[in-house]
Length: 92
Image (cartoon, rainbow, N blue to C red; front, side):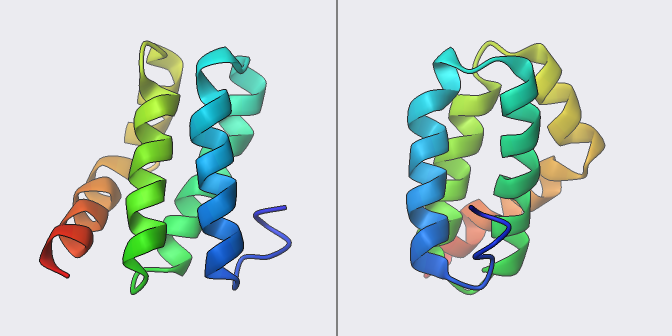
């Protein structure tokens, strides 16, 4: 759903909320797909602080106690993107 509606911020917010809610019980394959979508939402909605906030929340839940997810985020340049997202939210 996130890829199909990349331009719709409200849907990205709800999708990130759903990922954050489901992440603790999801398997690694689902998390890998979710990470790609979350990062795309972050990149596609840099001016939307609500999307940025929910992306950071979803990422926090995805990486909590999941070393494989932490490595994938770092390898995809996610740390810089996360910091930029946090700054966008805090500075708005």
